[in-house]
Amino acid sequence: MRILLVAVAACMIAGLLSSGPAFAAPGTAQTGLSDVMGGDAPRLTCAIPPIRVGAAASLTSFHRAMARCADRFWTGRFAAAGLTYSPPEVTVTTGTDSVCGKISSSGAHYCPEQRTIAIRITKQDLRDPFRMNIAHSVAHEWGHHVQQLTGVLGAQNALYWPASGSARTTLSHRLEMQAECYAGVFYSATLESINPGIEWEEWIDAVRGADESEIHGKPKNLAFWQDRGYRGGATGFCNTWTAKKTKVT
Image (cartoon, rainbow, N blue to C red; front, top):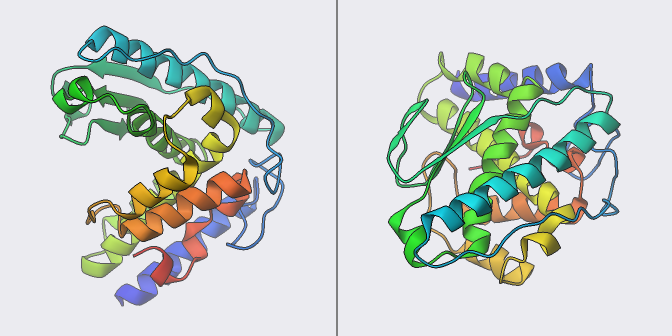
């Protein structure tokens, strides 16, 4: 029953997307939300400021600049697909309270009902403000906002709550890995502006070697999807819903 439910999830979400901008299965790409296929994405120059160690105001400015950059990028992609884009609200705090409740130590959350990205500046961020790590908290959560705008979050949510056990876990992984892939698509156009302080291959190696998360799945698969989005440069490369289970668990 749980295996069947996951199969239904893939078909339901794929069907939801097929009537609008097409999202292709892994290995292919189609027109739609991804206006450019195969790595020819136009570069986007964004003004992303430096970060001063120990300065919360500096980190806030960095997050706000990343938010403006993400808005510009996804506005262009939605427009090319003939879709209307609306930006999320962005809140930045050094505390733990947000519009969607407590922010965990992960540092950032997407609140679908409020369409808000809530970012917490952690003590670790203040001590060691690694640019790419901090930038990713924005890029990944923006991926969830794209899922919200295209109806994917709603479809996944409808299937998640009646499910249980391994079916829920697989649905969660497919959702998170698609957001990871969308972050990679964003980086394909903006990485130079972000000035990450690390080579792309080194970053992917670091993602691959991170601790495993029950919600997000195996680091090696998160690295695979983020790299796939980056090298493909289009959302058409991010259909995790029809990918083999071994690629999303």
